[in-house]
Amino acid sequence: MTISTISKADFLFKLTEAGLNVENEGFQLNESLVIDSKIVNWRYREIRNVEFSELVRVSKVEIQSGLAFKNCKFHKDITIRGLDSIEFDTALNPFNTSVLLEF
Image (tube, rainbow, N blue to C red; front, side, top):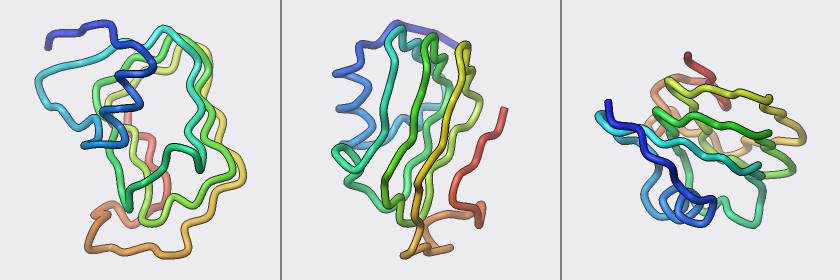
């Protein structure tokens, strides 16, 4: 798998536009990241093959049908706080869980 460094702006663009669900490509993000209500515009997202060098915060957001981190590495930490998943739809999220961390 090819791993390339991605800027926070490019990461957020990919996350909001299409998701980071690339099978044969990985990304390394060297900046801290906040996933909150300012950027969540989706019903369900999978983030795959991302190496996070700094802190990741998922905070105060309606994540609807969920958020999955698959094959990701967190060098500092990930904090998850104040999430709602009121409109959960198992047709969109096959894992039947609001937040998935699969290493």
